[in-house]
Length: 193
Image (cartoon, rainbow, N blue to C red; front, side, top):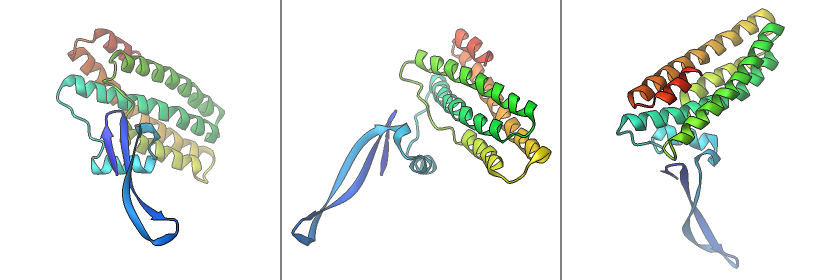
């Protein structure tokens, strides 16, 4: 069982304690452990997302902004690794260099988003962005595919464009939220991403 506590999750599991010399006797106890959300197994995090166990409270535009920033941070960090894999999989040298350049830019974007999150104090924390992870997973399927040459490179480009369009929508929304909240410096920083 998982319970959301902001940036941490309480993991509970039932354990059967059995007497060492009386194997047919035992007592069930619940063991609890608090751990950072990122330390929870990815499959368990997906289950938490699916069942709503990691729901956040969104009462204000500032809440929306903080949650979206946390998701943007997750997007950028996940994308760095994916772009490495896509660069390795690309056949055409120019495409390979393009993915490498984009990976380097993405690292810079991640640093900027980290600074924006830090400026909000504890309000913005990295939060799994399921739509972006799904797009990245689709790209990884292409990386693992057996195709080669122009067709595989074209499929990699399609996957990269899907991710890029998601990023455009994310940062456009974040810029608008920052402006609405009077965070002009954040809006300028986001526009540069």
